[in-house]
Amino acid sequence: MKRRKFIQNAALGTVGASTLASALVACSDTEKKTKAAAIDTQNKNAPVVIATWDVKDATAAAWQSLEKGNSALQAVIDGCGVEEANADGQSVGIGGLPDRDGRVTLDACVMNEHGDYGAVLCMENIKHPIAVAKMVMEDTPHVILAGVGAEQFAVSKGFKRENLLTEASKSGWEEWKKTAQYEPIINIENHDTIGMLVMDKNGTISGGCTTSGLAFKMAGRVGDSAVIGSGLFVDNEIGACTATGLGEEVLKTVGSYLVVELMRQGKSPDQACKEAVMRIVNKSKNYKNFQVGYIALNKKGETGSYSIHDGFVTTTYKNGINETKKPEYFDKL
Ligand code: GLY
Image (cartoon, rainbow, N blue to C red; front, side, top):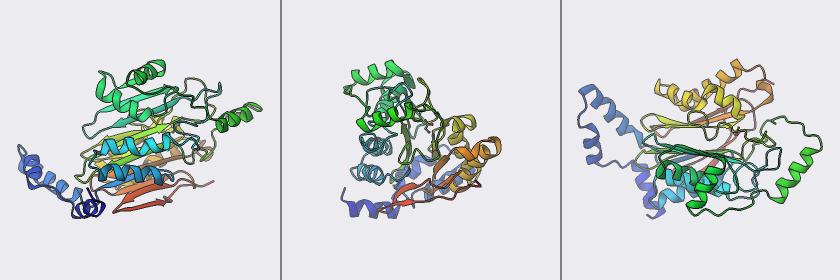
């Protein structure tokens, strides 16, 4: 579809009458009113792509994927894949900073509009874990594959094994070994863990999250990014959320699920992200020393975000405009 036509359709919020009619079949009157209201308003802002950090190439790739008529899920794979293939980015895909043994291990997951989920954890030697996660979801009876099993599965699907430890990341690791002090650094992930939420022109939502995790982590450590409800949660009736930052803290509060449930209760994406961040701030004495940021998207196509500290940015592609924004943050250092 031509770009102009795509944007026109998006602006008009095209939903076929037959879609509306079929969605209303077998509903009670109250349910019908609620569903009709949701469907009526859901597409005003669609399509929309939002991602953690300054990743305009990734959001542009997702947008272009939608323009080609691909699904929201495929747009997530295409968008996140750009960062995974970027050897200069040191926290996603190739070039990710390694664990303390010098191994680059990757975590990624996806969720689609049906609530299906697929993930790979602690996978080595494969550049595109998000695409492998989609295949775990679609082509296996499981939802998570980890370690060597995930790598073998990827190879069986045609992925090429390659060395993900670039010279720059190797030097970073060798430098780190001089002190071997382990301390997650606020916003070290800048240009990191890419979490992406996509709504297509019909209001269908999917999401994905991909990371090499914390630099110099213990061997076998897995963070939030590939764990359903923590690094990512999608409920196509309500919205979606994805996280970045110190995964241990996101995991302990099941952050992305929390944000979606708060939106279900009527909070805006901004309010829901803020409340989830405050849950961490209020529980963790140590919050001054780490960053967590959330981005969220609701069924109306509204986006929101919030982080503990300054430094977090988001990228949104909406109405044909690809822009980076600095969200509100708590920050009382
Ligand atoms: N948020 C990425 C990680 O903690 O692994």
